[in-house]
Length: 273
Length: 349
Image 1 (cartoon, each protein chain N blue to C red):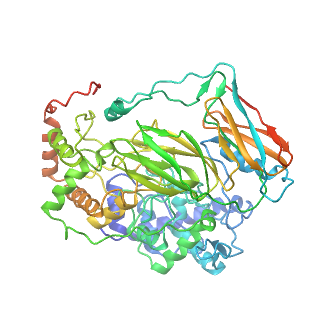
Image 2 (cartoon, chains in turn cyan, purple):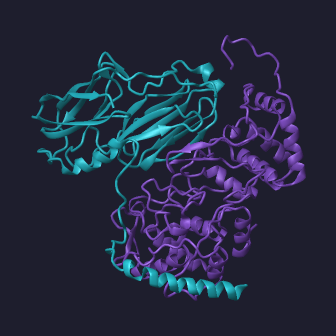
Image 3 (cartoon, rainbow over the protein chains, first blue to last red):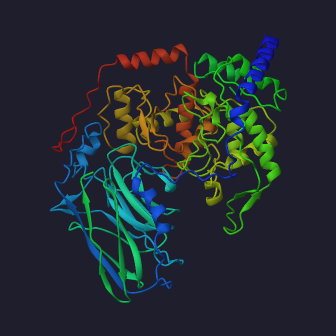
């Protein structure tokens, strides 16, 4: 048996070597550490972010501090896609505590989009102070509050489970971790290590639960309110590429130039996907 | 089942998980007869022609240095070349020439071979918090121990050889240059002093109620018992049982891009091992890229240990008549009607 195996393998190996010898020699050599394509399925915008950020013009002011204000409104053109009702019936404990059972994927009201993450793609390059104050992410009524938030790399995030049931908190991608939170009132402190716009956050127990974090090394970001409005303060004078990123609708960008202490507007309009 | 390669191979063949594969290399062909035998006994099909397109190693690989971000730790060209040579011989067939898990012998394997090059790189059994990069020691453990029920065999190679391969595997992904290795999850002293009736009983209650293992894994208890255990441990009634409560629940993995079926401990091999200690490590750390979260600090170690003893106990009943009898009895039992709940005016489905 052994002899048979070895001899047959050998024969096959030799055959394979011949079969492959010509086409195998062609392909180009690769560097030792090939960088995988920076593509992320969800959200598609994240990959673009990294790409365009490097191409964008360098900001004029390298100081990294200023007092200009960038504000604006994110609107939606056309009929807003319908939200659907979540079927929570497989998790009766959620049915009991849920206050809001709509998907809230789009958050569009009167043509204005809430929960859009707006940020400056090319702020002056420097080390920015990281706030010690934590951003709070609560699990309540089998939903995340807030739905979208911005946080700096290494800024503490306080994660709370306010529900009388188990959740697991599971960010995906570069900032992944997965922690069990079985008890009501449980709190955790975590940090994201890497820039990622957006880091999706999910609960495997309740797959409809979704939150998105815009994680950056600088503080020039904001999340739109119910009126679709945002405001980013403390910008130095310069020309910037500004992006508005929506968890489902993707990304829009625009360019603005602002002088010291100036005010500048950036408007974004999404359309149906 | 801490076995040598051939036992594992037979086990895999018997369970139908293994697809034919063949391992070979121009220069190394005669070096390890046992590998050839493995290949031979799997049949001589499905071999790709990608094996010669290996990367040319020209410079040392930079590993993240937690002491000083600016000064990466270097893996020498010599060591990488040694690792590459061994990788070609033992790993490439399934894990692929580029480490992307798309080797010719990896096609169709369930679970698929790990994609070391993925931007979503997640090691399942790293002995660190799920999602973090594993230590060399843990990778060594997985390679030497294999992953039960998968095509990942236990590799009976010298540690030094495996460690060379591990260094080479890191070159497939820049994450090793950018990120630090996770902190090892400490395995505490077993407070139960080994498996005991008390430990198993405590674990059974926790598994079915407080720790909610049954959200994904099967129940191994009756509705009535689960109700009682829930009231006892959490004060919350557990009255809603899914129809297929004795089956695991498939969960979508965004990381791997497919649905994963959590283990049924009474019917399936446990990949990273079914002893209480191995289970403690897996439960405490969570499983990277899957729905299985990290439990360390979510509940006391004592409770993780109890669950480990219980799961190990169920696993030891695997394929035994007693297990089948127990499950048949559970499945035949009529639905349990709990005492009336205090009215809350909410629908309870």
